[in-house]
Amino acid sequence: MSKNRFLDWFLQAQDDIEFAKKSLSLQHYSQICFLSQQASEKALKALGFRNGYDLMKTHSVRVLAEKLQINSEVTEAAKILDLYYISARYPDGLPEGAPFQAFTEEQAKQAIEKAELILNKVLKLIK
Image (cartoon, rainbow, N blue to C red; front, side, top):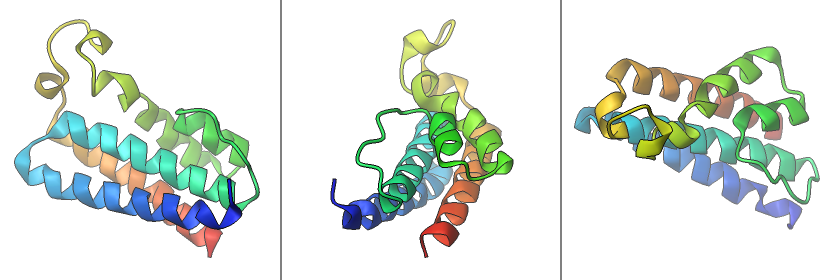
């Protein structure tokens, strides 16, 4: 991948988290949790591409954070966001019920908060 494409990844991460924040009023909590995970994944991949990685083949925000060796605060936020990669999208990711029925406003707000922490840290590192 071209090193200059990192900005495309980061801009998409920013757009994803903005969409998630605007979705709070619509109460789409499971989707917000997933979008927060996705925004974080894209932001960390942007940093990796900026740092010269050709391929970052994982969807785990925690694994990306650890590989990039940012800091423990980012890694801890990533662990929370990884919980939403499957469970916020697929009914078989939960013991019962559909994801849109299971996730709460509190979880959605926390997911946005953790994603913003990661995006802000990445922004500082890519400048």
